[in-house]
Amino acid sequence: MNPEVQSPTRPKRILICGLGSIGRRHARVLHQNFPGIELSVWRSGHGAECPELELMSHHFLNLDAAIRWKPDAAVIST
Image 1 (cartoon, rainbow, N blue to C red):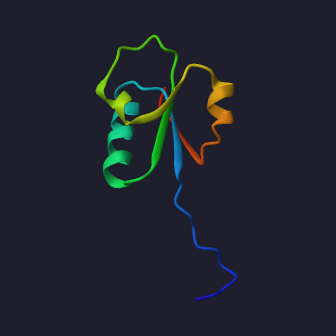
Image 2: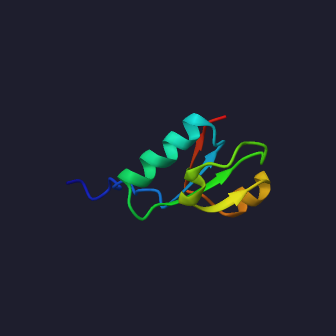
């Protein structure tokens, strides 16, 4: 193995932008397939409550606050 090639690191914090049907599905799939990953959501607050909110460590209504959380990756599902 070439020591100069960096191995990819798995994100530890993922921000899900939007929690409609697709955002909820992404949350479930990430939670089931990547144990220990920290999920948070940024949403308008106008959507209905859903069971996937239980998977989130944070629920942001403000984009600046979500960015300050410093996610490693984001899922845009609006």
